[in-house]
Image 1 (cartoon, rainbow, N blue to C red):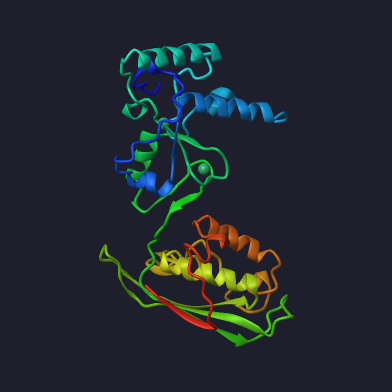
Image 2: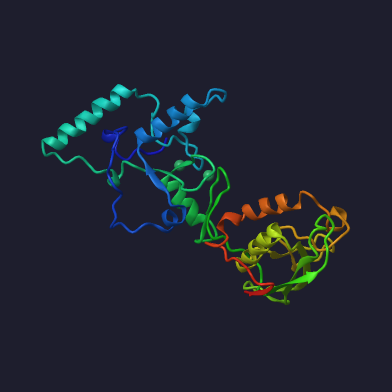
Length: 304
Ligand SMILES: [Zn+2]
Ligand SMILES: [Zn+2]
């Protein structure tokens, strides 16, 4: 059972009280843009979901559990009825009228938060989220444990290197309308990791069609490179050698032709797959022009 910080005030609907503006937002609050959710708001939200969702059976107890600690978000949320809430709310109002000063919510009542940009309504204990963030390897990002949405910027372990690209006259199979292709070169020199381990670098070439979607994916690749997410140092699957610079989880077309068996075109589902792989790292087309730089010239270069 999650420790209720103030049993006396349990379940009271606190409306219209702004979060304390002077209080410095913690880093995780800033990244996730979380919003505090009172017990009654949580209850009404879940009951509303149940009301509009006829086919799906919603388990109320499950909805009231924290995805990190699996305990109840607010104790006994669905054991109280609406009348209890009204009585408590009126009690609070009378106390305020009489000049008694009941505790404000920021003193411990509201400790459930909803994350800002998840694909669904994902509620967590504030403390659990804070601890998960502190325990994670980076203080720059948090991955929602329910929907995997990335908040903030994930920075990978790729060694330093250079990415360059240019538009060249070349028709890729499946994109016969365009006479041009974007040719990307990655150069990661051999070196030493911060842990002192020596690793072998790599030189790789990748191809994208020079159309709208190809240019969008190029912008996402360039940002992934800035965030050190394109390569890792690890064991090569092809040679079995350790401490090699190997591809990360974002797949590239390393051949202009030859189809999927040769890592080339045509491959009708490549764009949707690579966009999913990029989205899993927090890189999506809708962020181009805001959080992600729009690459507009026919050739470019990124160095990290
Ligand atoms: Zn929790
Ligand atoms: Zn989520």
